[in-house]
Amino acid sequence: MHNHGQTQYRSWQGACHQGGKQAILVTDDSNIARKTMAKNLEYYGFETFEAPSGTEGL
Image (cartoon, helix red, strand yellow):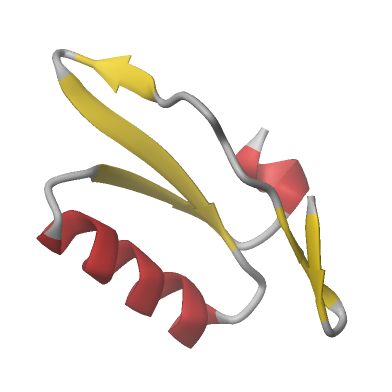
């Protein structure tokens, strides 16, 4: 886990596969940050799922 300021990020060594396409769950309480990250990941071919909190992400 990396700590950049007050936000923590986890580095994943693997990814989940869904039908051959890599899927990523984007979780952030900031709607703008979450949407921006999801759009960037989709641009690079990932399927994204969004959650505004860790609880909702689970």
